[in-house]
Length: 201
Image 1 (cartoon, rainbow, N blue to C red):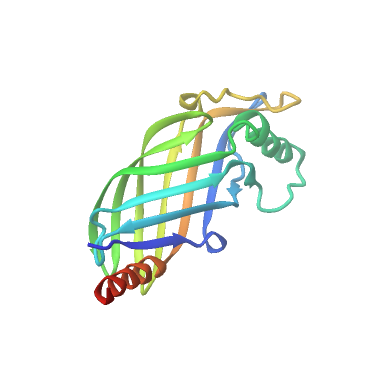
Image 2 (image 1 turned 90 degrees about the horizontal axis):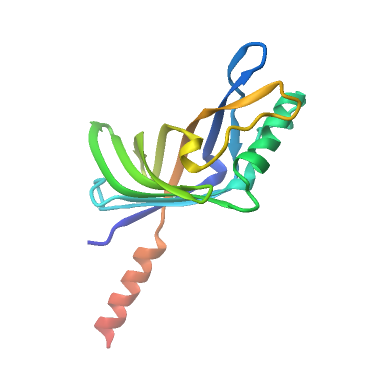
């Protein structure tokens, strides 16, 4: 059975990363969220269901930053540290998530609750990570929202102290995604053309 393919619309989607930080004088909890602006991805599954589903997302690590130019000095330092010292984007330019198992339960009205397990390749290391998400279908558009919490040390990422010593990144990062994906028709059209060519030969 030909699977349906939905391509991520990056302009309408959002992937945020919220590091946890501590201060020398007091705990400051979560830092403002950074955004990964450049990514591509695709979800494939059997028509009318999420069976035989697969997900592949590739993110440009160097695209991480604050939504607006941070005027606060500490925030600018956090953004720079995330690129250079934490993610080492010049050495490891891509972050890749490839699903290995997906289970889904229908909630009605085109909505599904899904649990994904996939391989996350980050900073030169690959680990299996669970992801919980809600998926909604509206015509030929798919909306997905979910989150996961990562421990950077498991990806050989050191705890980084922000220059000046006022802030230190903790070993915990929350990632939240709001994805919009649109149905692709090119695969179906190519398949139809192949069938017509075979029938006409």
